[in-house]
Length: 190
Image 1 (spheres, rainbow, N blue to C red):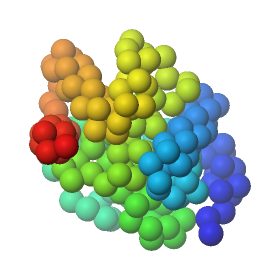
Image 2: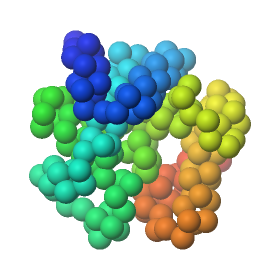
Image 3: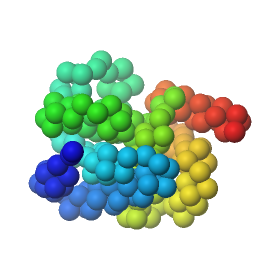
Image 4: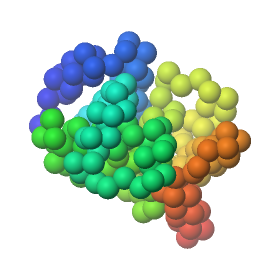
């Protein structure tokens, strides 16, 4: 259904060797999590391979691409760390003709998360956080939490992210806060 070989060639041409390797690792982790949780593994692999497709694209070009599909908030304009998730979602639609909302939203929210994340979106978010190439402090704890359950992984990763952003004195995207609160509510219901 998807031309995975074409997408791999595309990102290899667009990204540095480091970022290409990371994308392959995320795709493999996304496929693994998808199989474990009964989600379409091929689609998860595609979203994983493409999740950083615009990560190394000039910010002005990313912003132009984003603004063809959505209005950016002032916080988003001033936080270039979220550009690639937004421009990546726009790129796969405009340049690759992908219309599958799972893939688009998996890419769109893989950095910030959002309230009411689908199982597929959580898988892409967590695959990015726990892929084999990751080596940040607590990555083994993060992997274990994700193995325990996607909500456990989400809560741990969101706590990690929010704490890190606060320590850096940066603004927290409202989607991240809403995602954290939503995951807490979901966990309480389980």
